[in-house]
Image 1 (cartoon, rainbow, N blue to C red):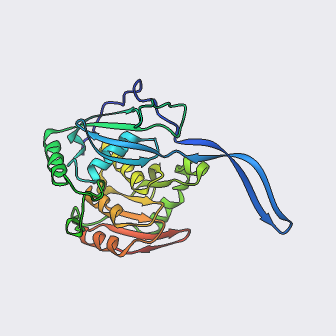
Image 2 (image 1 turned 60 degrees about the vertical axis):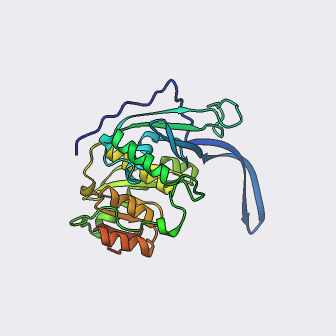
Length: 292
């Protein structure tokens, strides 16, 4: 896979809100002597609306941590099948917008910003996206999921791998040993998920953080696509349960294996098995469970 170079975001139009903010708190603790309390300040994670706009048409609004949003947008477009490859994206920029009601967004208020991430995509991918949107016209179902009934639910594996990545328990646990060091935001706020990319020897090369586990994974997949990574040459580690959506996103891009700190669901195991992915769960301290 060749490396994809995308234009940088417009910094003049897109001042970025901080991913964390400080708030006043009252810290209380219980002990044998009673309850003690003191006023303090603490870090909390920012969560802002992020609109993903393709060739001028807004497709989805996600609540996300305002960091690595270009990678997030590209990863979402790839993992949701809007784009076939990173080369279908010709450019990405982000900008702040005016919230409904007419008041201008102030970047000095970390609770206020809304962000648009605009992607310029190929005509082929855009035509397919428009067809998808037309098929959803008038429906009242979830716009992000894109279905309004069980008949529209696709639970098949997205990509079939000839052979998934074979890693042993020592490699998987080595990756998790390094995961916390790549989570500086969560170390302060304690409310963010992480998605990490590990090589076949268990060394982590990148960790992405977000309040949403799906968002963290999309950020990671987008970064890998922009870097021209070999998706089959490494594996994803997640600080969450192994849901079927996460497995399917990895499957769509041909990721060799995924490991999560909590257990996967039965559907996730089935999709991993059918797609040829390796799947680990309950990866904690000195133990891990291989499901596929």
